[in-house]
Length: 243
Image (cartoon, rainbow, N blue to C red; front, top):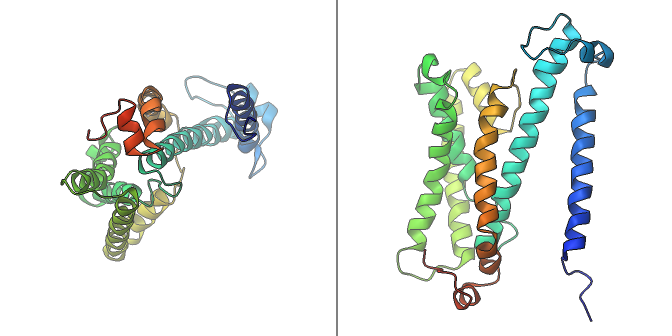
């Protein structure tokens, strides 16, 4: 008898359709929440160049819509990253926050805010590059730990990542104590997932990177599916579990 919980293609298709409908509904409803904005006035004041004639058009097209796009892109990236962590570590609790990746990225953001000149942080990829390097440091440490020749279980690596996250979180709190209030507030809002952006530069900058990451994970989906079972089964099915 077929297991009713088996994830078949028709079942996956229904989930994809439901997720797409929910996403589209949220994307249309979210810009209308908050302070009242005349939708008809905003739609009639659409301008591809960003030169809006009314406050409704400026608020709707230059503030609310970019933030919705940024939220959708960031949410998609976090979802795919969490899926990859859970598959490789074979633990449903694994995510970028537990492994210290998010705290490492926050350290990169703190360096950008506190140490770099404004002319450099104004560049499109300057702050994201520092955040990426900060997020990469915990992962490199865990990879180095896993490659020492000892047999570390996924649970051990997960606990090691949790300790790294605690250390980096404590470092972030220390940075916020000594930073001036404006910088500390900026770092805190970024760390909590703030979307206080204006214009389309930030989401359009992140979009190709997210698409590339999702494409790579999709290409490696079979390998991650095998690793989510166990390393012995994956090695028997042709996956080089040492790489």
